[in-house]
Image 1: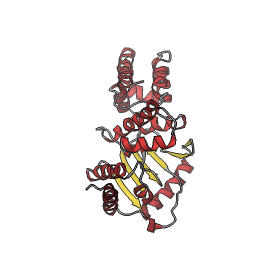
Image 2 (image 1 turned 45 degrees about the horizontal axis):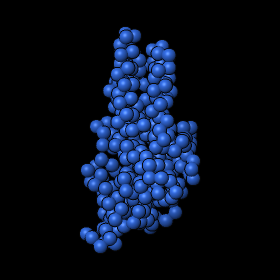
Image 3 (image 1 turned 120 degrees about the vertical axis):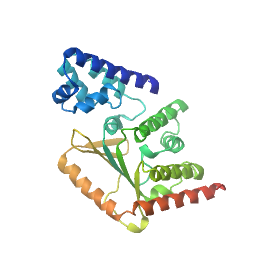
Image 4 (image 1 turned 135 degrees about the horizontal axis):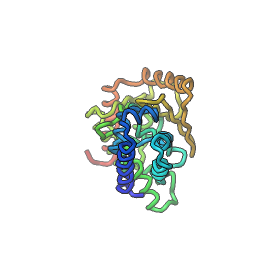
Length: 276
């Protein structure tokens, strides 16, 4: 489904939700209480600013007695071929988060990737895939990153291992552009970035992890391995992982020193291209 078509369906979802809610004679706050979210969230669903999780859509159907229409629309929209099956649920939650914290040990996180960087990664993982497949995946990365540009964007904090700055994904020109983009976002204070330097030595985590906080739901963590992903929602497990993340944060360079290192690495890659 094309991006424009998907947005049109979400807008239909919101319009239909408002119509059915008003026909039932209940306010946004009252519906929110019945489906365990805030009235403000219901308003954002109706304006297609935020997208409800599948279980919320199911509860809306129950509350409004709408014979499964919102569940069907939601399933249609979250069954997105741009995302791997194991990541689809995490992508859905990511769009609802009020705060996102990530640790990236080797690659720039998806929300910070440029199209060319995302294309280089996708090609390396799918060397025999047709162009259409590659572009579909790249489109998914670019579409996801738009949440950092929305008026309702989440607070975003990333810790990048120094490896991320040094591995020339896609070549020096692509890498320079990618790091310049990260630096620009940090300078605009759209994101907060720290770098865990080589000098820090051993560190508390060996794999990538994403923490997501929500307004009306407990925090969740997402980890990823080879062609698999895992959502962690056990509070004790999430708390333990958060403790390890806090250790990384303490060992990382300050945001100011991190920005200097990112910009310096970008210049190093730029010099390798023969341009400045």
